[in-house]
Length: 116
Image (cartoon, rainbow, N blue to C red; front, side, top):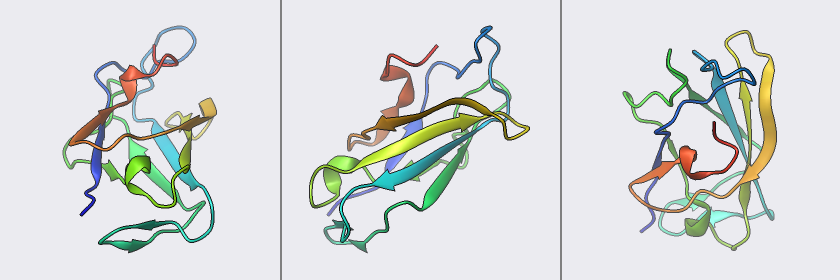
């Protein structure tokens, strides 16, 4: 049975001048064919936004932990998330970009080249 993957980032999200995006919000929207499902859990909907909060240092809040379904646990294959980052005031800092979350106990967003 598929499990949710905890989202983390070991390096802070920063703006163009290198300042951490304190209390920013990452928004993830699932993209894929209609009828996406996770075996053992059920159907999930495209396009519904999931927000993940950042702390004062621009890192994903880890307590409480924040989770997403990994794209490789969603059927049929080929889904992605559209991710964007807004600052505390709600202004777009980064994105939107497509990202594929890989199943595991955690997924570190810092592993992507767009990370500062």
